[in-house]
Length: 263
View 1 (cartoon, rainbow, N blue to C red):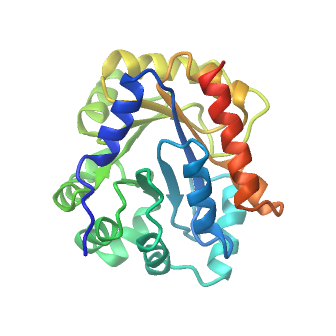
View 2: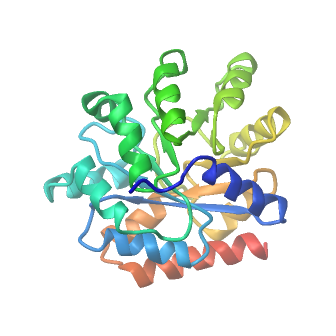
């Protein structure tokens, strides 16, 4: 049975933001361990507003070493998009789910089938970072028809003209890239993070969620002094790669939640 997903992501994030909360979206690589789905459930219960699940791909051009390692582990375990979909179908974590993957996997399955597969397992949104805006209309159309919200990314080098197109077409939220480069925890975030957040906030009423480099409660709170929320991925994935489990992930996400709620 297909779950109802249409508009759920944006609605949930808008509701939380308009109620005064800052948004927290942890990222977990699907299939990286036997208990990855329990990790998703744990971080949802620890204060996440949505959870981003990575569908591993062999050439993840946007991802740094940490997420690449997690993707390699997942692929070595035999993880496929279909195996991730099967686990997500049983999950129902209580918050919206967003998948992140690369267009090669979407193309291979077919845009219509991929979008419908996401909707059937309750996924509300999708991020396909290597699909150029000029070539994404077909995917956006199929995703929207299936009830899946396509989240688009904007980077520090994005022109004002292109930014206007991105925020008009993005659904769920708009993903602001904090810096030029790949994913990965950073000791400090560059000024480009706040600048990017401010540009997006001036351009749209969509929830503005910043990602890349945010790795601790202090950084999350600093970014959210301008943005509506943060994606935290590599720091959480590194914890899991180093042997952490669902309880450790929940503790970490709870610390991020506390940092956002009480900066």
